[in-house]
Amino acid sequence: MNRPLDVLGAPGWGEVDARGLVRPGTGAWTLDWWIRASDRWHRASQEAAVRRQDAAGGGAVVETRMKVPDGDAVQRVWAVAVGGGPAAAVVEVGNEAATAFAAALVLDAPGAVVSVGRGGVTVGRRPVLAWDRPPAMVAVGPDAPDTVLSVETVSSTGASGWEGEGRDRAALVWAVPHTARLAVSAALGAGAVPAPADLPDADAVERGWRAHLDRGARIEVPDEGLARRVDGNRRRWLGRTGRTEVLDVAELAELAVRLDHHGYHDDAEVALDEVAARLTTEAPVERLLAFAVHHELTGDTAAAARHTEAVAEALGAAIRIGAPVPVEAIERLLVAAGQDRAAADLRRLDLPRAEPPAQGLRAELVADDGDHLKLVPGFRPGWRGGPLAVYGLPTRFGPLSYAVRWHGARPALLWELEARPSLAPVAISAPALDEDWSSHHTTGEALLAPS
Image (cartoon, rainbow, N blue to C red):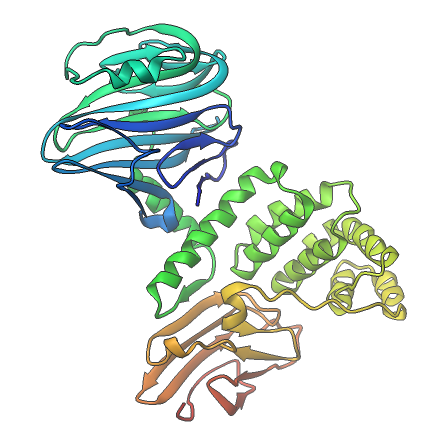
């Protein structure tokens, strides 16, 4: 499976495949990596001994390991925003083998003119690669990979073929001593490419993404694999807000719902504003659900008013095709936007009702589609006895926090609901833990029945 290379706040994106092949979103070129170890050349795209591990930060740094004699060659790739310019990827190859090896980066740009200079590579006259340390050897043209395959040793000093121009391909070779690393930066959009030393390193990128992820609701589950998947999904959702122009309306609507469900309301508005700007009759139900979810979970009257025209257009399109509509939620949105007459007109129509979207882990942690609030309705047997908590999870009744702790076979529940003043008191229950327990208090703790 390919891993996305996304950033927030900069145009451009890319991806890394299961063997470390880097490709920008434009698809104009690819960048493979090869290692000349003591026995032979090892090409990552063809080697069986390649395995990938995603680093921290919800997979923000993609790590690919290739077994070579005496150890591993390790490639790491991450994407960064370049101040005011397009996104860039940093591609780093490190030597964790006991002996030195040579590393080649092989650029494939079919049909394009590839030029290599002392500071980097251009494809079709556009900057694509830059480096801090120039390669020891360069080959350009369709036969460049064959030239590299004929190389048995590479000096760590000096260089041959600093400059060259040809079509389709370029191969760049560095000597990499034991424990050393080489790095290049690659353009993921149109514009200049800074050298890797001028870009944030992997640790800084991981910290940055952790800060972005922590803006949403905090979820703690006793399943580490699930927790990693949640982080990875959230990073992908946030990253997609930087390329809304390539998503269709249905994808944008689904993205907005997922972001809202996890508390990234400002980011969801980016997707919703793009939905509202599209002149289309496609996916009317998905659009209505996205606008409704955003209003239900935020109570944002300004956003409701801004999206009223788009809601009316989607509602008309849904009615024309007889599609189901989230009637009650849209009524509340229209009233909040000051469109009382439109809300009254909607109430008089006998429209098929759409079910509110219940997706992924959030649907297991809370159910807020009825007239009361259910905590952890999808409790998994594997969670029994382990710590489970959510903090600031959006619901239509207000942000919710709760924790489940265990006293032998009995779950202890602590909860706090920041209820909206405009709503009537809501009943809170946890039927998957104790079907007989409920409370009308917005905060409290209870020792539930054994389960």
